[in-house]
Image (cartoon, rainbow, N blue to C red; front, side, top):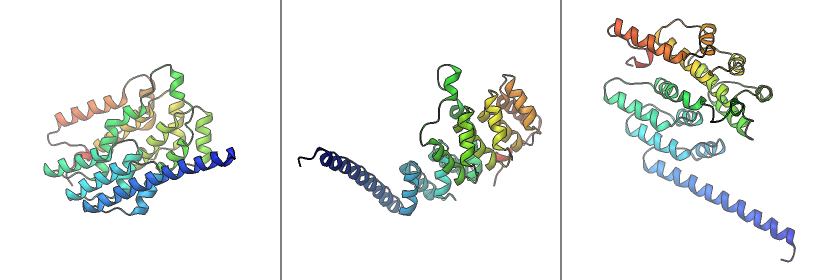
Length: 261
C-alpha cells in the first residue's frame, strides 16, 4: 500500500470496526448476565439504550435487583431514571427497603423522592462567574434531552431548543424540570420554566418545592413560589419547614409520597 489516502482510510475503518466490536461485545455480555440473573432484557432494548447513551449495566443490575426483590419495575422506567442523571439502583433500593419495612413504595413515588434529593445537584451552576451557568449547548445534548423528554411523555419541538439556546437558557435544567413537572401533574408550560430561568431563578428547586407542596396538600401556586424564589430565599426549604410543622401538629400526617400502598 503506497497510497497514503488508502492507508488512512483503512486505519479509520479499522478503528471504527474495533470500537463497534467492543461495544457489541459489551452489550452481549450485559444481555447474557441479565438472562443468568433471571432478569432478561431484549437485545433490541439494550441497543436502544446504547443509542440513547444510557448506562446499560446500571439498568440491567437495577432490573435484576428489582426482580429478586419481587418489585413491579420495568426496564423503560429504570432507563428514564438513568436519563435524568439519577441512579436507578438508588430508586430500586428505596423501594426494597420500604417493602421490607412494611410500607410499600410505588416506583413513581420512589423516583420522585430521589429526584427531589438530587435536584439541587442537577441544577447547581459550575464554579465560576454567572456567565458559566448560561453555558453553550454541548453538541448532541439537545438530541439526548429531546429523547429523554419524549420517553417521559413531554413533547418539545426542535425550534424550542433553538429558542432556549438563543436566549442562553440552561436547557438541561429546564428540560429535566419540565419532565419532572409533567410526571407530577403540575401542568407547567415549558415557556414558563424558561422565563424563570432567564430571570435568574432556580427552576429545579422551584419544581421540587411545588411537587412537595402538592403531595403534602399545601396550596402553593407558581406565581407565589416563583416570586419567593426570585427574592433569593429557598422555596423548597420553606415548603419542607411547613410540612414538618404539619407533621408535628397533626399526628399521623404523612405526605402523599409516604402513603402506604
